[in-house]
Length: 202
Image 1 (cartoon, one colour):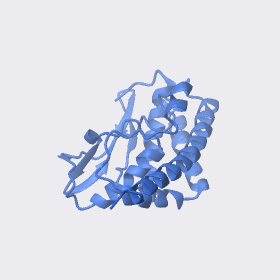
Image 2 (cartoon, one colour; image 1 turned 90 degrees about the horizontal axis):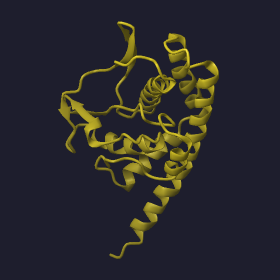
Image 3 (cartoon, one colour; image 1 turned 60 degrees about the vertical axis):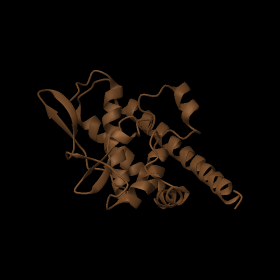
């Protein structure tokens, strides 16, 4: 639970909602999240996952492909502790530090054309390629609708006076541009990985 005294916290919650919805829409293993209010404070509610992920999970290939999604949304908090499981099904949690959230301009510029994940989820080039194909298959209009919907949901809560329509619109516009640039970067990066792999001596 967190109180709303900083518009960045509102942005973090909107980012959690967007990441969950667009990720699930693409078929990646993310949990549904809900913003709840309790005793004047707001936070994220999601299903409890009691197990640590491992490479023998039933949906391991889907998890492996999801690494491309985590890179696409610039999730700097992607680490092994955030890949959990229940009933041998793995899920990725904690996306509040994705997109432009909590990132000053200089840091965005530094990270924009880099891989940021701290855990590779047992992925190979093929998994990354397949994940990127899924991302490439969704329309920009759908991404925009999900982004605006998530931010509007937090705006409607009226929990933070500093999180204004103007502020939210600017963040949404920045995020949409970021996602386009990240997809272009990943196409080049994964393409380069393919060349490096196929050029290795036998």
